[in-house]
Image (cartoon, rainbow, N blue to C red):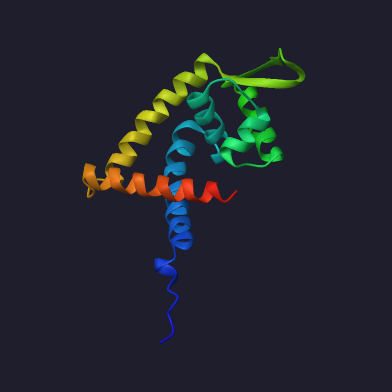
Length: 147
């Protein structure tokens, strides 16, 4: 008997659909309330999480190409959400960081994000959520072993 292939149980397909839908729904919130694009949000979220970073590091962490990051950084600099300074270890590189306004914005978005996530997960108990995250981390680790 031949095994069937069901897209709805194929992990890459399912994860991609979930990620796309979640990103679209969440981005509507920060776009309407904070006038940020998806790349701009990813940049400020990574700067908030990791501190001062180069544009190249942001490309790697946020899984975005150089031109997308460059455009988003330009706009964030214009809005004084991030600042740029020369890297003391590499004069060719620029280090980016959040300004006070940027940090304040991230805190407001975090509050919106946590409320949005809580609403989305209201039918999942804490144990189920912890198991889900643990399983996703195992999949992620497995993928990185093969790289």
